[in-house]
Image (cartoon, rainbow, N blue to C red; front, side, top):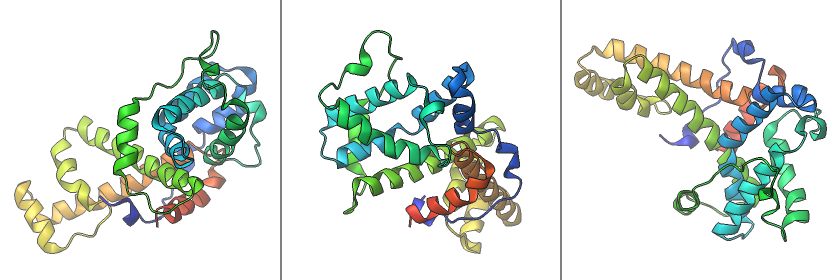
Length: 248
């Protein structure tokens, strides 16, 4: 599946996602809510890699990038994010991209400060896996900010795909998902559908209908992931269009 082939397609009914993870952080973080802390941790665990890639693009070595990423998120989780984030900019992506520069300005000579006693446990990163991923991905001549944005968009798609795979697995349709996922972002002609139908012992018509439902559900899950990173439903369409542009 080629992420660059993902297309923006507004899907109705997103109002069910109005209570988003980032919204919980903004609204409940000031009160030290456990729910806000859990929401922030979930966001950090999902979106740590774009920051790692950003730091590598800033010419930090693999070990420094790993340490700084872990320590940044540990410090972030120890702060009152709800009180410090600018609610006029209701996107976790924008908040996260702006924050490391402040962190680096004050902490580049104290990489391990976030590991001191009393700090939250850092988001653990497998350094070798992170670096292998960084080295294997095509990195055109993009700025650190653009690298961050592209990796953020890819993380959204990856998380949506994982959720779709899990849904098909729970329904006992893992094989269908594995065979049909290649059609999520590319058109399937009659010949291709016929081959897949034969492989799955089904009619071409039923396979075409399944692919249509998979695509629709995938778009819904992409929007659901986006919804969790913005403060309200009014930002979802803008962020979805931004994601499509970031992958173009």
